[in-house]
Length: 203
Image (cartoon, helix red, strand yellow):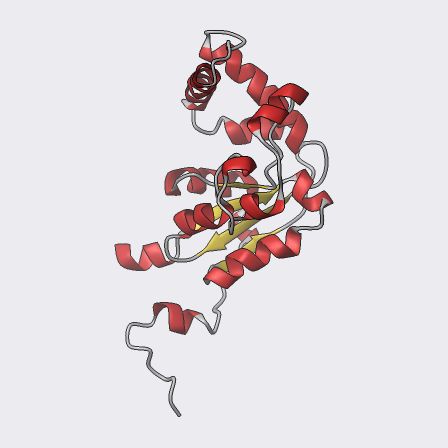
């Protein structure tokens, strides 16, 4: 049963306003499709700042974890963080994220397949485009960096959001989509990806 469930793992991807404005919707979709994942839900919305805050704070520990991570990142670069209080630092970060993601239309999508969360994260690349690998979405299609984003006092424009873990994905999928918005259907290539013996190929 666990094996079957794993083959139907779901994850959330959001093409952010910069990805939409740069005409990268089709390119992003193509990358995940090519890997063998199945698109089971998609729409275009303009999220409110309040909804964006709800998205990022689904995990009650996120505020403090994000604040600590940001403080450590400042210090690793030899810079002084804006505060030593993780919650105060996170408030700044969250304010930038709310402004960024509510600035225009976004395209939330649900992708399904074996190891969907990990596969999407691999294809998407690291959070910072500057250091993201060539061949990933963020590494190939944008040139932004933490440094420039800090100078401009804004969020890093990295095209897409993807769920960080299966547990996070479950929460995010439920937030962004109603059950009736997800389509359960079969793709022909699932026979190649999941059938144990590759039965039925030869006539």
